[in-house]
Picture 1 (tube, rainbow, N blue to C red):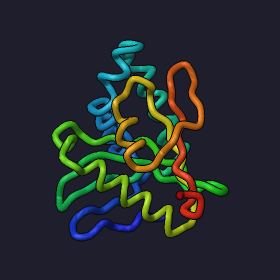
Picture 2 (cartoon, rainbow, N blue to C red; picture 1 turned 180 degrees about the vertical axis):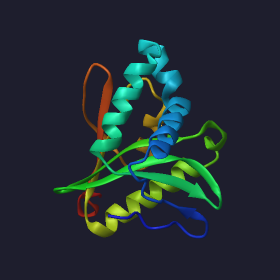
Picture 3 (cartoon, rainbow, N blue to C red; picture 1 turned 45 degrees about the vertical axis):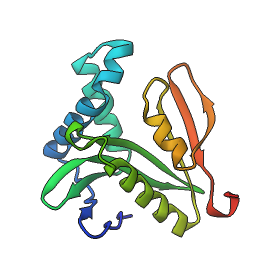
Picture 4 (tube, rainbow, N blue to C red; picture 1 turned 120 degrees about the horizontal axis):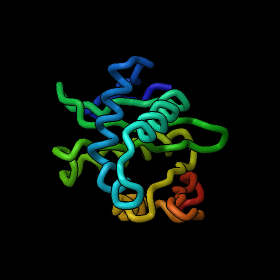
Length: 158
């Protein structure tokens, strides 16, 4: 599935399975998630590249573009009964400017139109959890490292 544009100036091109796309998405991950990963495990370049390469081939990645600028990436995958949202990485220059909220709200509106819940996960110590809670996500479980969250289907939201 394609992710519709967010007028007037956001587009979400599906990223092809190319070395250039993998490199861009990896650099977006490093910039956005590196500090949180380093905090727990340090940064092992080979391990992080292998994990990222696997994720890139497992799910659809989309660029987050505004006009002619590449702002980051996300994954939006329609599965049976829900949408899996993730790999949501904004480059630091575009963080804390309302862009993440606008992009997330747009993706939730698409899910709403489809009548589907949205699931995601994030590192427990990553402050992005507050963004997700503000947008109606609730915890569904956790592991030693990750918080799992879901925003229910539209008919289940009070």
